[in-house]
Length: 443
Image (cartoon, rainbow, N blue to C red):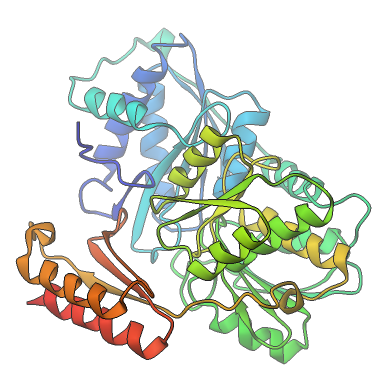
């Protein structure tokens, strides 16, 4: 069965347009509640959100929907996505709910869910929810309605969890770090984590107003972080996205490191400690240079579909711990059940502190292949998969690359976009080939 509402990372869209409307959110809370009650007569869900103005409306509608199905609700207020995953598991809740559209602009919002173990839920669960959405509501009586209350110390609990992921024998004392929270969910969490571990912290992107999430700050707009690191003479800069599950890192020279490179550093740190790393998981987008570097260290490498949920599934099936995406979604399953930008930053900084080698030194010899990634907006109903022109253009590009690069064309799971990626030994070649593919799609 195909999914009607769920994409690769929950349900997402523009606020005020279906399905991101209050009436749908009430129905969604009710449908999810009914699915939960198949296993538990009185379940409790934990709801967190980022800093978008629309979070108030969606939170209230979901709360009403859950209560109408006889489900209790625990509200955290603004909290990073991985913080919701952690507290769902730590507090033995039946489900974690995050109201966020991650790196999207404030006009968008969405919903994603975590299991009682703090893990992304399988497709089968999402299909069960979609089936319940198509059914008539079944309101419970007054005596069975769910209750709602606020968890006042959610922020403090999550800060302590993050700090405990950093080596107890290490400190960030002596490091000046710029922390950019994208005016998002980590604005009141991330600066305190790094400060309490000893770093001198300069906070930027930590003044949300409901409308400025991801606007010119954060992991998807790292220019502000690069400038701040240089202006303050900082050793490193940490940029998170709106819900703080992805990471970009900058060094004192203003050099930006993506998730592929940071994954390699995390693997290398484990190897340096004498810990076994049988393999790591990337995605179809992972830079080929990182794959070759890992294999040179006798670390197996496999590619999952794009999306951290698919990286997670591959890690679990193989019993491995480390994986991630170039976008900065990084997983260390011995630390957390999901991608966590703050924890990932701490693991990279831990590698730096433990080895005494800078980030650039740890990546010496790992030179990324140039990649060009272009986005093409799809028209409603556009059938790009059946395009003969695109197929011909792709065959021509692959012939020109001659096995010295890669082509990947895929639809975004969160936006009406087609993503075109070409990887080649030469940047100009990658750009030229990618543009030819985009032109074929546009025609």
